Image 1: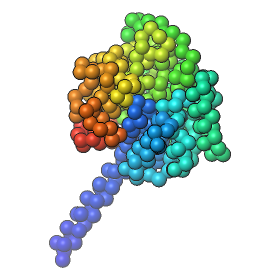
Image 2 (image 1 turned 120 degrees about the horizontal axis):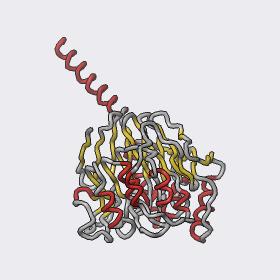
Image 3 (image 1 turned 180 degrees about the vertical axis):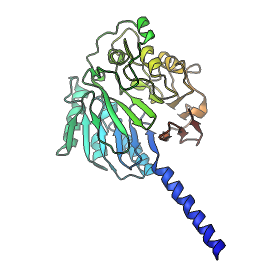
Length: 345
């Protein structure tokens, strides 16, 4: 009997250790919304942060995919929904999503600034969906009060943080070769940008921020420091010489990411120029993609195992998941083929 007691005790100890390990994990789901954005984070306390909601329409495709990820994550509500800006590929899914899952708080950069018909309608639909639920305007330097992770606002409403974060502030030599960016008067320039920190693990998401804002963070000094994980800005878009360009070499190299995820669609984002800048970033171990990029063709797409939705397969909306520990060890998983890779310091 003593032997069986020891065995049972050992099994219980393993189960407790496994549960503790799960409780110490930050989970990030990069959801396929066909070249829009929707990123779900669930912190070690079980609190949830959703960044953007993808497109409207398509018979509820994007809310369906968000809810599927929420089910995998084991959550039944959204604690905080951040809307980076009011383009339809980011805010469009809000009404359908809010009708199907409880959202406790809406966070955004303030009122819409782009008076095009589509953006204006998207904003109006968003405001209607918010209704009487709590809505908060975020500004650079603000924090979102999750208990298990630190979420700091880096940009919003065309402003950036002005002082370097702890450990940052080094001169950025790449700035000298960056052309002066054109002004961008679209909602992209209003994007909320976030730095998510869990222990030593750092993840940055700048929404669709364009080059003027990127250089505000990176030049002449790097105000952010380095990160472990970088979500390519603006779906991996780059149009040098215009106000609509993103993923400037000055900020990508300054961030020095170990891993990057490109949330492109088959025909949206995935610019060869942006792909090359990120791919060649010093210290990058791997680039992952939500989709094969038609624009990238053969030369500017990663190997099939790193792509959640390849070109020649029916699009099932596969996601990419990141599971991160406090010591900055993290695993990236392709939900299509269960290929995974763990990154250690």
